[in-house]
Image 1 (tube, helix red, strand yellow):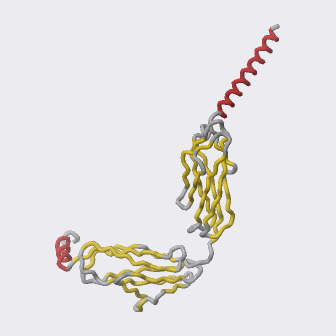
Image 2: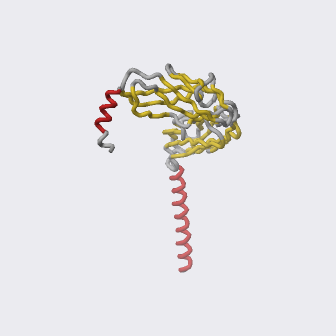
Length: 259
């Protein structure tokens, strides 16, 4: 008799556990549910500069309207657009992803972040990847992209130097643009265009006609190149122009302090 009561008790306990489990499963399944067919896409091998597009398809597997609150990407090179922000139960939606490969090389992955009202997983991440092949090209590189010359006299020429290197595989061509500057290699004027073989470096001296104005000076020289990734490059020159009288006054003021 006692054995029968124990058996009935355990049986009832198992039934209750099953009911509670079933109720929990039903509760968990209530609300919207964002489910993607695929959360990753590999474009494979592509040429640099191509604009790649893929559509991620998803479905609302829940029993309430799914709301896509926000779609963000990991960088400005990637854009993502959702077809509809509100998806009824059982219906599908799409997120169109566009990736501009310009400026990238080798294996690259970009990420798309989705925020929704899915109570079980409000945030999801999609991934697009590609192996980007870069064709041979000239590549310009400077030893510096700006220089501060400090103080210099109003009557002095503005002079500085910059090293230009071709780190690419093809010959680099460079032209210089400034309203009052001259460009030299050694004592000779730079030819137009300046041609730099692959792997080579040259030093260019920049000479700008002195300005009559005193005070802060900011100039820039524009480099126009056949590097498809950097067709225009700026080299900035700054300093402070003083007269001889101002220089004497500064020297007199600080000469005792620097002894």
